[in-house]
Image (cartoon, rainbow, N blue to C red):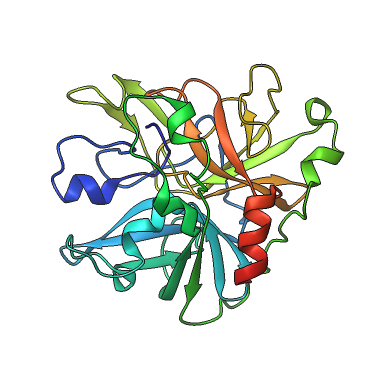
Length: 272
């Protein structure tokens, strides 16, 4: 599965095969612009504690003063402390453009319950990894309210259905990889460009050959490893969550999980 969780934590845990990983901290959106003006102040970086050190590995959006919207695959292993030793206390979130403090700790995490009932996948089959019940959405409840940051609004039911998608401009934001200089994710020694800075990029929607239009939206090249969980914005409103890249070099299109879909809306209504 080529989901776009930057699995720095898995590398640190010495797993041999990683789905979404770069060697070292995550950088930013492929071909994006560094957010030096802090225009997307409500997009934060999820950092995981491994052996007393903190690593960037996913992105997320502040949608309430103390709630961050992100992907299920970024947080499913952190809901409670498991056999791997990771739990909510090993997650912190920064809203600084460079991922520095202040840091916000986590009270609890709620992952869409259907996510845990999905069948095991294999290879790179989107029909397995992205089909129901793989609802890739989660909420991180912080220990304190985030100060000085305005939460982003979330799209209401059917928001994207009312747009002429090919005529609109959307923006992805995240702290993921900037570029692959040599190799790819699956190379023995991948070389990637990273800078640890929040970045953004305007994208367009691809409507042809989209097998999952009711739950995902296909966008042009932009997101990469570490951008998982970050937002797809339309006029400042979160319409989808960065989820999937088609390429181990992040050189192809991407799929984002629609928050205006009925499954996502029901989850949000029940937990926000």
